[in-house]
Image (tube, rainbow, N blue to C red; front, side, top):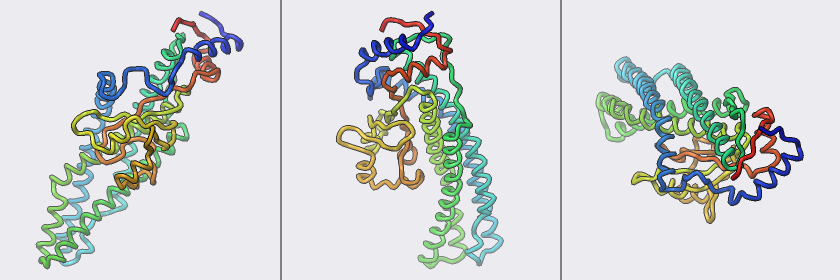
Length: 326
């Protein structure tokens, strides 16, 4: 083991930096369509999928609760369309509580995974073996994490409630326009909020929220690792991959930002081409999903080896290093 002086750190940094080329390209076999790409994406889905399935069941119950309340009010006030609704305040609270519990677990899981992955790649890329093993715990109380958790938790219930209300209004409007009786309009509303619709909607919501939370956690984890400067968009490579995601494939952005670009194309071009609004993320696209049911994720781009990176690793590993051949 070698105790590194400041001068030694400078010399090691210069030597290893001279061997590093094209730092913005991932060297861990994740190129699109390769077995490494497929493994990375499959591992990602395997981690996220159990959370998504569990959350789908939770959302389905809450949507059914909304629908049942609407159905009860239809029977209670058969002649008053205005009363064909549900308790918005109570529903908002229930949805927010469910969302917060769900996404916090995913932020922590994928944030920690991102930190571990980034530090492992850093040790390989920089040609250093660090002892004791570098270990950083994802800080869920970090202000950036709390801010993102709060934003997602606030947006989610408002969006779900707004969609349910819009579906009710649309069903009533069509019934009135078609000259239907009150009973027929009521049947239309109940059909609109039926079991099949609720199941499909719960699946869409769970997938979208899971992918968002997982990638938010990863982005925040890469920031906390201290060795990542950028992120690269990684798509699911199969027959279901859409044109939007294909255009996003390979785009890069600094961590913590929505400034995606690659040669000849940027996020603004994609937004304009497909008429995307990014309403859910306040007009920006910091990380996937770029559309409902999107399956994309992000991979890290290491910082250029520098004295600061070595000092960071030194701080974590209590100034103990061993230099190995690259």
